[in-house]
Image 1 (cartoon, rainbow, N blue to C red):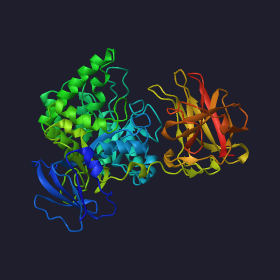
Image 2: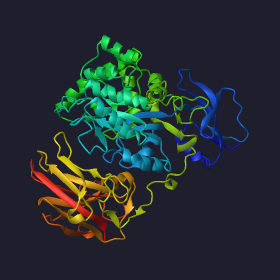
Image 3: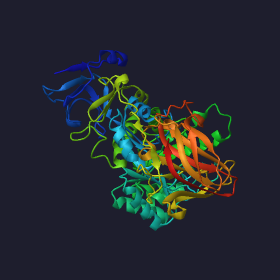
Length: 587
């Protein structure tokens, strides 16, 4: 049998690593002290893995003769960690999918829930993730209220808006077609006493959404931060709160109601940690400290009452980096009153229970996925040891640390697809383009947003159909309304348009600031103005006329990383504007 020794020195372990594990069907992890997540005391055990799942675990297990042996003598072996609340967004740290995936693997995280994506993006992202070295990613379908938190950006193809039991059922039925892994409902519009509140969801609507999701076999988490809304969520049979309650401390009676409901809590202490802003002179930091103390006290009360506490971070938000925040969350749970062992259980078995995946992963036991993390130290005794990740294994494959493939040989961004000449002739009436991609409305952001309606309508003189868009501009400094046409499904994978010279469109509309924008990967955008009038005209936009807009990495135009084309306009606040377009193509 092949054997690899992992010494107590992590640096030496990496130097001593043998040829990376490739196609071996049987692997044995030997010599480690196993914290299995079941509540049993940690003990030195052997773990035998076959075809990505744990076959045997025990002190006196015979190592199969054909097994690839990984010797982690004296080190800590635990189930892979979970992070049940993340946002894989270009505004986060890091900014792109391969780098975010790597950050979680470096931190021993093997399962995450992503709350950022539109349902249209699930299929291409799942296909891409299957080719990456990455943790398992659960995608959450997003539901909010008109004017609610989460509905203050993008359109209803990203976040459905509901305000009644009937619309709740319809929203669940609509997103189920995309096979989400769970549902996230933004039910609480409280904005931390720092800004005007968004709208909140009434109890009847929330209960109807939860009931319909449960009929479909889906767990429901809610964006909830106040005690009042937490109690509403408990009565509505929500499975878990995606944040900690922090406006005040729970009473014993309220704790009992939550416990009896069976609802869990994922406190996301990392995103609210006021120590991140310790150098700020802003008076809001003082208020944050009070709210954070409430959150810590409520975690302590709920946990001691028997409420399941899971681990999530809201990573992707400001000063909440992917991966590292998960490890910090465990430290904050200890600060809230959990022991290191209890915090580690929260990050493994308890999180698996809350997400409904405890029959598949979350403990080290026969039949479950071989999602395993190895640490240098004893994190169930000293929580800071959680930072000393030595190896991360997903489905029995080492993806970080010992035995992991070299970083420079790992898959990353897929090769761009060649662009078709015709992007959209707007003849389809189902909201999809000539490329079979789903068009989206791209209004401005914020609580007071532009009201936009778009679709297709017959063109005059029987000339087929055209795109139409009408908008009432928001009371903002630079209100905006637009329509995006993805070049790939969900505008996820890059498309190469460099074989062409520019973009052509037939267009007419309000004579205000109109523009054509080519959006690229990782938040890059390039834009040019469109001189609109009330009369049809064919406008050609050479690629050489496109100027970088809000490009976080100041990338130069290459045309090889484009995801969608967007046509839109910005008019005076409070005014009504319109636009029609036809035959959008490259030339």
